Image (cartoon, rainbow, N blue to C red):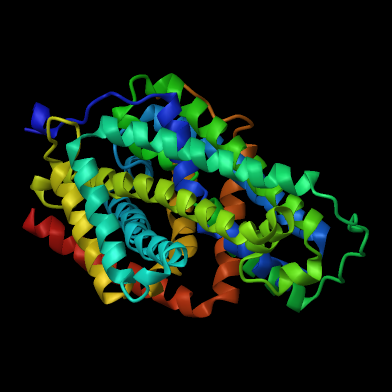
Length: 436
């Protein structure tokens, strides 16, 4: 049954899509909004840049590990496949649904935020934000129902446009004539307050980098996953890291640190310095371009996770249905229905605040799966091997655990919510297995 064309995804994607979906699924409103909050907590130029670089190194080590796992098991749904093979069905079930949760709330959130920015451009639409958000969701759902090829082309175009917008803003910051800012301020003394500030900053930075493994969700649709996936992951990661780090440096070049720390949208402040009165409009257009690109990616990702979960018996069998265009229709419509409900009810906000937290659980299990499979299945064909193993894989796992513990200390409310979710997952798993 699962081998019939109705239950098979089309192998039509390549490196360009992998890079585009990684850029599209990562660069969003986070990088535009977080610099001000981070500057308020750390208040030191070098420390802030160092934290963004640390996040980038963490991503690169993660990319290496995911490249090995994704080429061993190029299956729809990404990380949970690796976890299930290494640690069994329950861990796979838990990882898959947690991964689905943090990705499925994305379309609702991005549609809402897009509608808010659209209203800034068109003030006459004020009061109709929910309708605008629902309209974006319905349009993108209909677009992706047609087939995966159109979504792939759109993702590449929108991701390229997003990169161009960021490059223009960054270049303009360095060409504008401003008084050079001194970066020689002393590092603050490490103490409890600063450590908490660093942990909270890293939570924001990890959240801004979230999505760097997006290409893995589409491994089953790649024409040559053994070669394409590592290239897509590394090229996408390097692009995102360069944009994030240089963007922060550019902001510091034109906006004083004191002003950055009191700004809710420092990118707009920088654009006003560079482009004058039209700067605010430029940033709104940049934000919309970023969000539309990330929305397109997140319309595709949850459906792939749900398709994989359905095939493994963790969702209804109808979730495996694929149309002639290669779209898992029931999985897409189910995810769109969830997003629609979240837009109308607005209850997704609390869930979205958990995303960076929960993603560490998914990543921790995935990194652990690499180490476990290296030990128990040493002869497994590995088209790509993680560089620096076992040191880099052990280090990225330890860093993930350390970040999770740090987040638990600095954000106990969400930590308790995660414990409740995990506790409820096992009875749900047993019930599902019994019915199956």
